[in-house]
Length: 319
Image 1 (cartoon, rainbow, N blue to C red):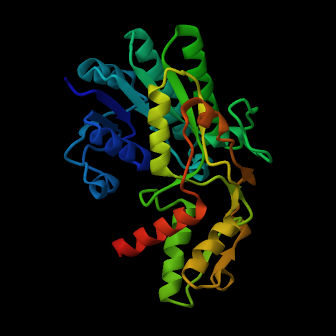
Image 2 (image 1 turned 180 degrees about the vertical axis):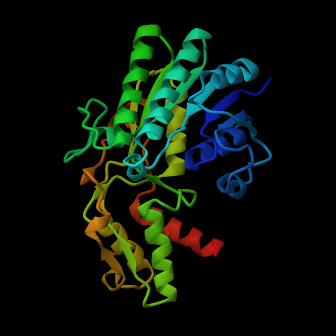
Image 3 (image 1 turned 90 degrees about the vertical axis):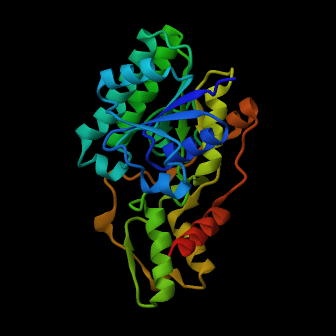
């Protein structure tokens, strides 16, 4: 029996790399598309999968690159994580952000339509599309994007729904809330807090300057979300889903837990600078995981305390 083939677009980052590792463990052949280079990323090297992925250089905004890949490798599954993924950077890079997400989504959808692709396609969505959520969001929540990144993800979400309903394409969006792992980019605030807290444990005078600590987010564990992504993609229930924990935690509480685990008082080290507050900041964002539990029997088992413990342990190990 021949192996299944999966095309992972945006294969070098946290989610693309973790998904690739999971697929490889299930005997898939994994073709990874990366825009900048074919050399393995640090994440792929740390996961030990750099020799197992067929890494191809290409650009999701170029439709020919997508056409050629699908024709050549004939994948049964396509996963799209490609994006300029920083909400903050999207304010200074709106054109690049929107092109990478919206044009990329259209190109994948058009290719699957024109080639009569019979496989399954997953698009990574973002909770940013909902804007402020004072109550747990569901997939039917109204959209209120507050950044160029969120606007692009909202457009992608609507395009996937349109192509599925109009052309019968087996494509879905998994709307991902915040999810952490040791492989998340260092520019994310959670990574700054973990690495900064460890510096404080070694140097009692060290300080960390960040933005608004009163924001609240729904933080999950990335590897669990990768499992959910595969369930959604391969399910006979072809519908968009939220991937979340349903638990809202303030950044202040995230900081407090982190410093407590290192026997430190966070107030001695954390400085909040209003100059670092994001434009049109979303204060509360969390989702309702019950639909995914009902449809596919998925629910998270790793919550904020254990997430922080795992992140601290990993940072200590790699020092």
